[in-house]
Image (cartoon, rainbow, N blue to C red; front, side, top):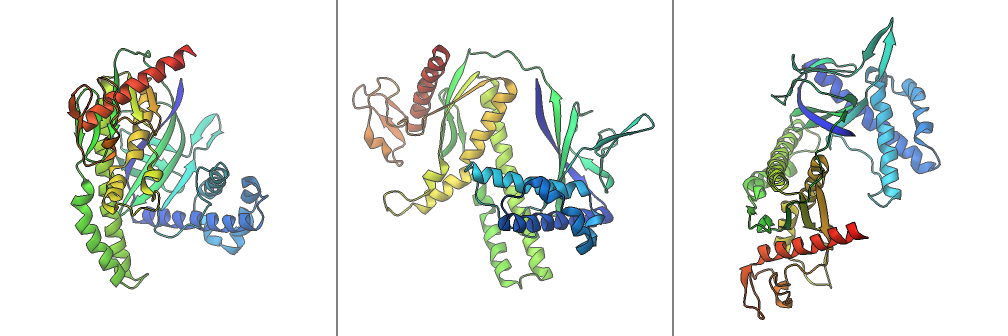
Length: 385
């Protein structure tokens, strides 16, 4: 089976390479914005029509010749992809790109032969810890201590800047042999705010609330940013420091979620979770005032990331991932007798007490057991029909 896998490395460019990388960020942003403007005026233009207009821009913007030409074409493909997502109602209408906001560019692998010798514009040498990229040539990298060689065909490379640091992500098409699909052990998981993940086995993974650790520093830097003159050197310094804090916060969350997902998928073959609609959880309902604290907690709990990581890990390990209906009342049903208690809609009640059979359980464990039951029924119905 062929699958795409990404490898992310820390990039250590020298001063000249940093200048060229930053130039490429600016050039790809310029091309994206120019082509978006053209697309707004004439929506019938395809991405290939827009690519044909790049050579004419070299006369008006001669500095475009200094950067990798493939990255300019990739910027147009990104614009086309943004439009396709908009037409499929998967994203918003494309916006103009701004400097300093998610600086990145992508370049594709190009192979050629000369005198019976094959040449590639992207090469990774893990022995010497270097990567060869178009225009940049060899750049030092760091990451994956135990990885000796990347097996598979490189498809593209994406260079990003996060705060003061540079990274490169290599997408590789590799052949893998998936393990046999099993159905010996199933687990239901309840995703929440107080405890991030609670399993039907009784395992509880708490919410470290990393946002509280960085909140004071973020607020201070945001205040400092508003006091600086926009575009000044001091403004840029504070902006970089702020993005560095956000990067640390994001990495802490990702690491925690990856550890949870690895533990859950290691010992179970069928993983069952609720299908959460995070956007609906954040909007106002029935013109009632929204609980701002709950809204903030939901955002910081990163429900969407947990679901996505679970889905990706199950695909990688050839395990079954099932989602039960969003409106399935898992918290209200007794996991022993099936009696429904509508009073459990109140999130402040952390203990489930059944008025029929008298069972007393933690609210989240009761919900995770119900999710497991519902998921198993759904799984076997799917197999039968």
